Image (cartoon, rainbow, N blue to C red; front, side):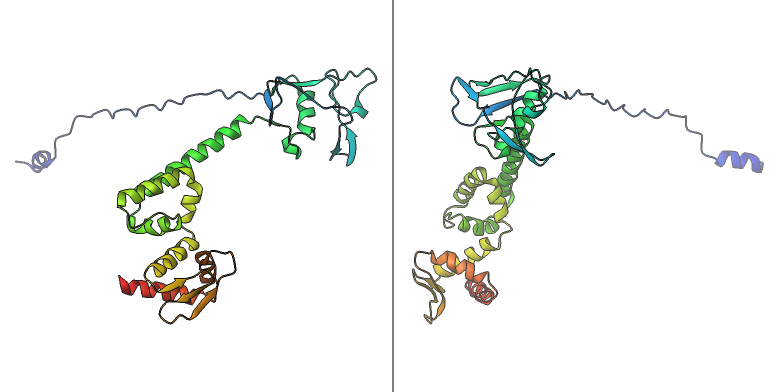
Length: 272
């Protein structure tokens, strides 16, 4: 057998060429976001069926000219400043019906008048405000996400790590684990931001240590003072009318009280 034949026999058989499966084409969905200046203003409180916005002698500070100018709504004028309006300018009443006023995009002078009016909440007033659906939706979405994160924290965190949080929110930690989680769940839903922030709060840790130290008679929290239980020596005095636990927490978070907090923690660890 020749060397050429041997080499040919030793070669692997060519595999049939298989066409690669084409990658699935990604469909890009198009959306049309309407850019409109239509808006709605609403009366803050009351307003009744019909409420007329005061116009007589309304003056505001014009930041552009740094002057005080009279504001007046005239539909047939391009400007809302009375000193820029023509001699035939006709003032028109601005009326809220059922507490609301719809402003079309072809009414820029009305929108400008309402934006500048001193009764607008945006200008420090208290009578009416713009209904910002985008901002309201964003706030509601952020609140929903916060609540979801807070609920997940109650579900996923070990119970031993939740005890300090429970003590901070005055939940009975001697109850059954499911009851502790249930109580914390209600707190997480009602105040998700505060609940999540409590996990990184030094006050939460300090309050838990102090509360445990009082329960195990390491310290004595009295209406007028906080003392060591065994020696009855003073740690910090409590001003009249203040909560001794709050006073002790504030003290332990100072440079002077840091050693006391460390001592309390060491004593509690020895009891474990």
